[in-house]
Image (cartoon, rainbow, N blue to C red):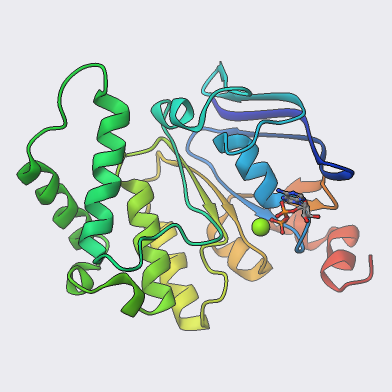
Length: 246
Ligand SMILES: Nc1ncnc2c1ncn2[C@@H]1O[C@H](COP(=O)(O)OP(=O)(O)O)[C@@H](O)[C@H]1O
Ligand SMILES: [Mg+2]
């Protein structure tokens, strides 16, 4: 079954075409990495998928439902979660407080029409379990702004997991990290449940190949290549772009 189908999606901002007829589909349980230089349109594509912007034209289908014009909340209720390239953390709160808020947000979305939030204790138990599961228990009571950047990115991924999404979008979770921190984030992504469909933006090709079973490459708003590691490594246009020749 297709988790996500993107058909001929375009988006312009004034005179700038950020997306030009992008087509891409992703089977449930696959891990796709979206590569491409700065300004290629990767984040804009994520915004169009998550509902933070509405595509100017084209169609986006999530688990068989047309979501092209749905609100971000409606898409989240269908099982979609994402992180942002610009961090979305409340940096003056502790790690556990951020996770608690993410769980409350996810539950409010799911149960708004059905039943109250559940007990605070319940939510706290779940937050502690998530921190424990992802090796962040030792920083749970630290204020987020005092964490290393690598730990902050991991906290964001855990927050996105709070609602047990079926599909997870990660916008450059390794951007600005040291090689050691990058490795920890890559390990975390690799450990995510296999049934979860993952779409991750990454600019480093080697990191992409560590995580992906399928790679798509964007350049100047267009999807220019997709394939497995061997196909992408052998693609002349992709290597030209990465060497700055195009
Ligand atoms: N809100 C916006 N208003 C105007 N231009 C935008 C906006 N968002 C993105 N762009 C432009 O769209 C293009 C693609 O940007 P983006 O999707 O952020 O690229 P990437 O994530 O691949 O680096 C860039 O030229 C960028 O300047
Ligand atoms: Mg981006």
